Amino acid sequence: MGGWPDPLVFVGGTPRSGTTLLRNMLDAHPDLAVPDESFFVHSVRRRISQWGYADDVDLAWHVIRTNRFFRHWGLDAAAVDRVLDRDRPADYADLLRAMFAAYAEHQGKAHAGDKTTDNALYFDWLGDRFPQSRFVHIVRDPREVAMSLALQSWNFRGVAGAAHRWVEHVGAARRAAVTLGPRYLEVRYERLVAEPEAELRRICDLTGLAFEPGMLDYRDGALPDPHHARSREALQTDARRWQDEMSRDDVATVEAIAGPLLDASGYQRVTARPTLAARAAVARYRLSEGRDWWIGSVAPALGPALRRLARR
Image (cartoon, rainbow, N blue to C red; front, side):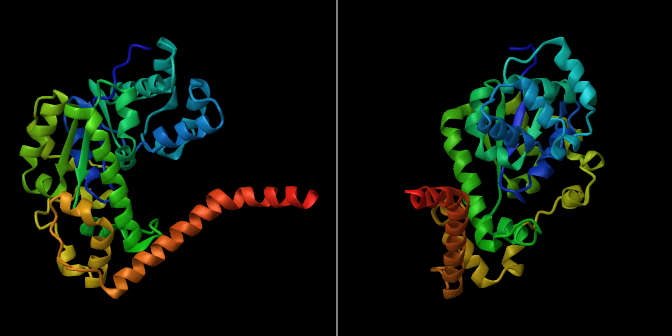
């Protein structure tokens, strides 16, 4: 393994849960550099594994350097090349260490971290490959998350799909927490905006950083693109807008899907049972999921199988 340290912290959570707000706060620390989202970490790993080259670091770096999410880092690929020239990575995790070290060096900071929503789905893999890293899972009321996600142009599953995504991320992160133990910390979005200093001190204690008051004055260094505009605004303590803006049927849909995990997270239900519209929305979502599973898993193999039968 090369001489690069593990990233100090990995942040994850369902999209629209406040991960970017937390990223901006952490990146405001003078010793911690946190780039824009690094979806390539997991997508490239899956791709080269499917090709049978899981630890071909040259291939991995070739794919990563052309990835649009890496370009969002604003880091010249030559800066990573210079780091790689000092010590060749032994495997894919080592390549990532080198990349995060290059980003921290580029930002003039001692440590690097990562904020990617889908990290919550892969905390177990990350925890195994980066044994010195710490993990922060940010959780927000699923009704607020679903209301926000349903408005996003890239969300094609509506409120029901958004609720399912919340269950998927929160469930995966909490299962990983069993193995991660004291390396894992859960942060509530609602507490973060209500008591930011207290929550940031908890995160600093987890990572070994000293709390810096400048973390509360994060907006100057916030991500500039329109997609993250809300994370540059002043903190809003009245975070539960869903109570005024979400329809009863949509609330019932979220509560029907999130169900026990919503209860376990301490969020109180407001519907006693699913409405007819909510049951219909859940059924439509499950049918669409089954259709996509068929198209993605069964249909590609069906054609060749039928052709083989026809030849007999």
